[in-house]
Image (cartoon, rainbow, N blue to C red; front, top):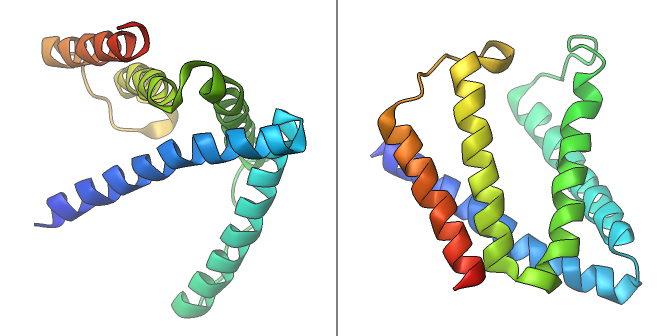
Length: 149
């Protein structure tokens, strides 16, 4: 039952990403500058996350250890998110939210398979199997069908 709930949470998170793309694209049109929409999206997200972090820290009775991680880790996630959000803002009005999500999920899956294979940043190593390759090819084929058919 727990695995099912985790799967539902993952689906809900994916739905949020799909909804975020057209919302940010509309904001970009309203601001007449898509990169400004990405900035606003990150700023509002940072404020909300700060509130959630403070509430979580208060609830758990502990605070983050800001001295723990390497310096580059403070920037890497935001930089990667900036690429994704800005690209989605530019692409959504041009190719549609479904195509943007299909290509984004395809990229996530392909990168995930490679990251699993090399055990990126200490992740568990998972072999590239015929099933994984077939699943990735089917997802990429589906993304192409969503965009072009």
